[in-house]
Length: 52
Length: 153
Image 1 (cartoon, rainbow over the protein chains, first blue to last red):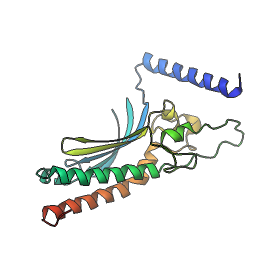
Image 2: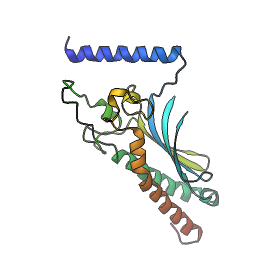
Image 3: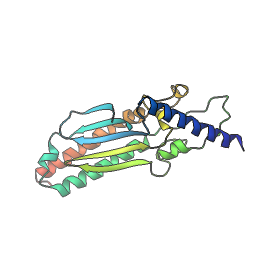
Image 4: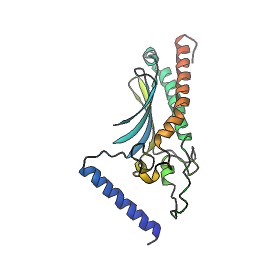
């Protein structure tokens, strides 16, 4: 097994552990990292960050 | 769950005034959203230089999921999140990545300590693009206003 393959396995395991801890303590997961553009007629020009 | 940056565009009631002309409204809005998403895509920064003592061979996966290579910009295939949709009288576009670990690399509030100060954050793409995107929508609004004045699209 190469170092790269081993690193990949370790990283996947760490992600699984992180997901488990998040689940146990009810922490939100933020899998999708995005910028959204919303064209609306109700809110003044603004940029804001939100968690949904 | 999603961590989002939101750029909101106020159309100052034009969508309501254009309600009688859905075809024209959709055409202008679709084209403007396409151009807006393209600006976000073009503003993906390049990868930061690796740490001097790093022996890790980069896979390019993070950039690839954003439609970019290590040099940044629109240099790869379609980003993993790249959508537009109509919601009632308004339009919504989304640009980003669904890569599991990207939250720890470029997430605004979730970036891992070792990446802070080295890797960009998603909000940097939004901030760099915002003014250009607003300008595009202002031009679209002027176009629709001229149409409502009977001057065509």
